[in-house]
Length: 139
Image (cartoon, rainbow, N blue to C red; front, side, top):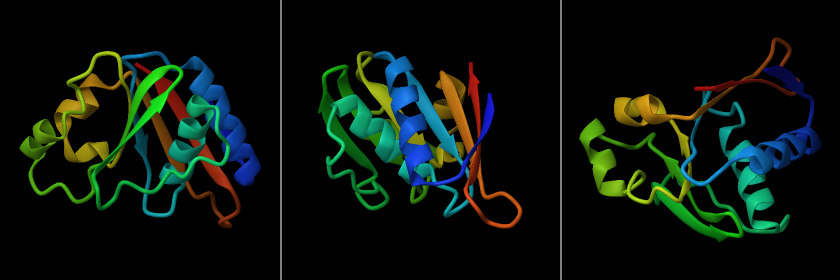
């Protein structure tokens, strides 16, 4: 599926749609350049999963992993951008809980994570810079 997200409201709506489809054990990777909207979409998904549109969802860039408790179970939001070595991903425990929904930005830094993904969301800035193009593939 491909779609244009013209604004933040469209991103939030897509996040809610995706949250409704996600199940415990899903591993979602978010791909795209810096500024493509990976964190914004992850934030929308997490807020929808938590049924809390005001939930503070910081970028996990420095913490590497942010955990959340939601009605659908645990959610882990990870950012692997600062990972120095792909083997370091094991220490993060992203795959330790089979009941968790895991959202990973910069997953390409860990081939293991990419191989285990159940959903890939690619975001890009379209020509002209307005909105975001999103492509979603279920593995």
